[in-house]
Image 1 (cartoon, one colour):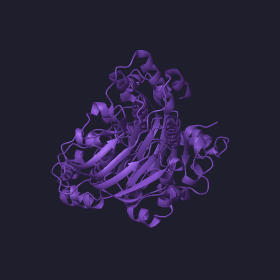
Image 2 (cartoon, helix red, strand yellow):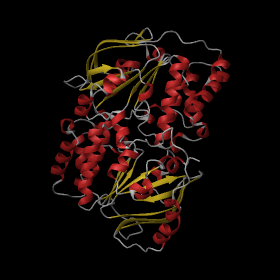
Image 3 (cartoon, one colour):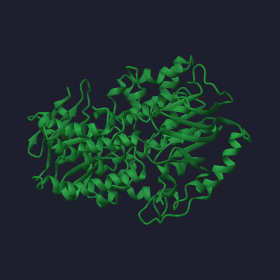
Image 4 (cartoon, one colour):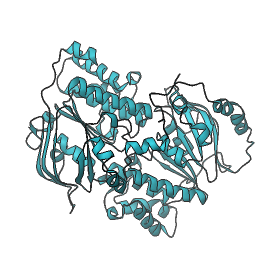
Length: 538
């Protein structure tokens, strides 16, 4: 980053600020505004966190800060937003984009190119910069987000976490004075979240960049915050320093289901997972046990308990790509909730797609209830929540979305199931709304509701924490416990180690395309060894 500033001979950016006055916005066809009467001034170089329960209006507010609202929306906006001296109503997006950039909650929304380095260079090229400057900006963004190793990769082949880092890199390459990020760490592993927080801190201290972040995960970011804004039902209900909010407004945060950084630290004991004070330790003995006797037992089918799923010697690679998975063997018994953790890009989502029958292994066997070949409709047996919920929402209303599975499977009570799920997930008021008009957190809940309405025997959840406040997430996990007690099996793919510790009956850790640990939670996720197992620290 220092080298970049010397090479380009750029002076410090002019004073940047955000001024919001009487901001109210109502989406087309809605009676109630999404955000209402917001007044705010953000000083140059500040790092502001916007927090609140899922669907409270955070994303809408961020879109207003960058001019996407009202420039790219047909809704009704009142009030004024001025960013770096530019009124978002009066200046076109092409001009606003030179001073303010946004990283969307769904990173795929902002991608235009097929290759990583082309995507990062897309914005600077559209500014008409020369090739040398574009190359410098690409390198700066790659290094800042620590994705140099992804430079030549295809965007479509990246994991969800890798895409999130790419989206941040693409925004950084524009060198904006104001950077707005909508849940930038939701799909990142612990190391990625820490790296992102460090990058944001460096950008504001070294370049005077103003940063506004909407987040549910604040444990890594909290130490750098200047200010915290709490929203609920489109309004600002608290505004102050981190201490004033996290210490002085605990009752409010509890009521809104918001987990403070202190609460997260308390969930994992006195030493946080992967904390800076941790020392590297020798590999856990669990690794050798799984690598020898555990896998051999699976390969010989010498399982003493009822297994819903058996995965034996599975390997996989995408066409013309490197090997993603190798020698994967494990089983999931009936009424087990198994957590699968690991850093970004190790193959967790690919494994989920293989288990769900959406991909075929290069070799090895996947056995579901004693059947090796998955023929016919798997909907009754396996339910998969995608990491990006938009990919599995296709009906024109939330009600029809939740009804689709059980109705297609000819369950007579499909309407009742849909009502119960919509009510449980707090989506009953959106029953007649197009799913794609919901927030990302609401989409995630809707996709989960549609899967649970079909009551699959095996449920696979790929990062269900995305866009969810703690109250919503806890309610989901408590419901899953009930289903597990009734015989459902769950494979939970998550970066949230606290969640795995609290709810899983067993934990598997993936590293470099294989499972390196598999066992009881307290053995596999001891507080002082987790970082080494997950990210392969030496």
